[in-house]
Image 1 (cartoon, rainbow, N blue to C red):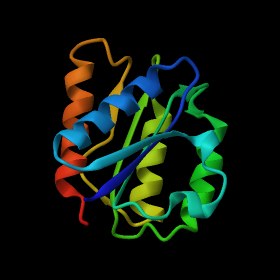
Image 2: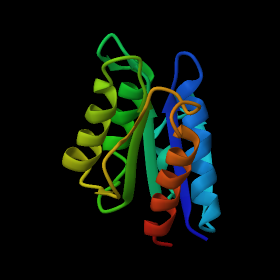
Image 3: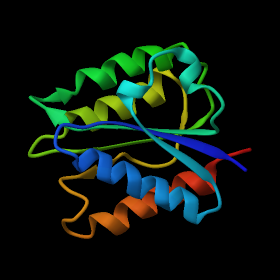
Length: 145
C-alpha cells in the first residue's frame, strides 16, 4: 500500500487541521498517510520510506515557520526526486510560505507536484474541508507503490 508523509508547521493549529484533512483524502483513495509536525522530523532517515510527500506551513511575517525551513534542509538530502509531492498552508493575508515550499519541492527537489499548492485561510472557511480532502485525494491517486 502506498504511503504518504504529510508534514506541517503551525502557529495556531489551522495548518495542522489542514494536514489532517489532506491525510484523510489520501486515505479515501486507499493509501496510508502519516501526519507529522516538522518538530518530529529530526534526521534525514525520518523522511525515508514514503511514496508521496506533502509539506505545509503557516505564513508568518511573509515567510514559512522556521521549523519548516529546517525540515526542508533535511529533505534536500533525502533523495525525493520524482516522488509525488504537494504543498499547502494556512495564512492570514499574504501566504508566501506556501509558494516557497511548492517552488522548493518542484525546482530544488525535482518532485512530481500533483497540482498547484493548496492555499487556505482556514479549513473551516469557504469549503476548506472539502478542498483539503480533494487535495489529498489528488495526492493519493498519484502515489506509486
